[in-house]
Length: 329
Image 1 (cartoon, helix red, strand yellow):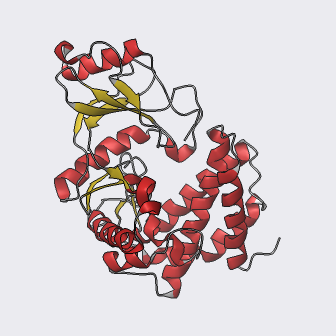
Image 2: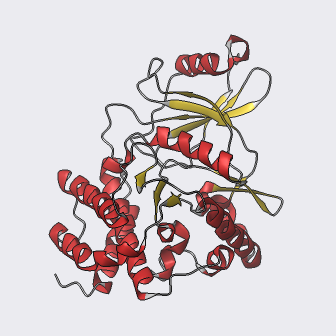
């Protein structure tokens, strides 16, 4: 996926990064040792062959001069911290971080190296899998997600720098307001009046008060962030959007309140062992869908997308979601 947030670097800088992380003796020689992994949507990532033959992944944050959405600021530091939390507190397989450099001495952004996991990306191969095999992976993903949600936080919101004492209602409505302001700042047409969205959120925000325990929420755990091999999930990647909040905000629950827009949620729900069933749970999930599709529409402007497919799909889903709140234009 092409995006102006991808901070590609010249070969000389990549060599300097390898030297800093692994030492001069591991700097590759010749050509063909750095290949861009182009499946991601936000950061640039390279598959690197070190001089001794080991393969690693280099991930670089967006350029300093590129405007990102409010919630996307400092996401690389979040990801490194999330990987440490997951590695310390669960058995969920995640890449090992080899080196993290926030100094911005070699380029204008943070970067880190991690292990390369030789496996298939579920998001790429899922449409080629037999239905039963895909369902098995989706069910396993539900179980993995449940284990991630067992990590407890001391506050709601960002993993790093979050304030203590704020309720989930305060934090989530603040997150959503940040997205609305991002959209208004760039004058993004979301197909509905921005203040109408605010009114809907205010009218239904009391359902958020049931959430009193902050847990780690991956939020971006789609099939494209799952690596599989020999019938099993062998790694979960891209943890940069993690925060402490309500586990019902996880991606696997999206289609429970937005049927037909995403994959069948039933296998995921079996693996997770829970579905939104109460009126408050279902209303929370609708608010979370609203948040997701606001981002999906607005981010296309920030990332300079030239293909309007994502924007058009998100805008259409926003109309459906708002209609579900009995919204009237």
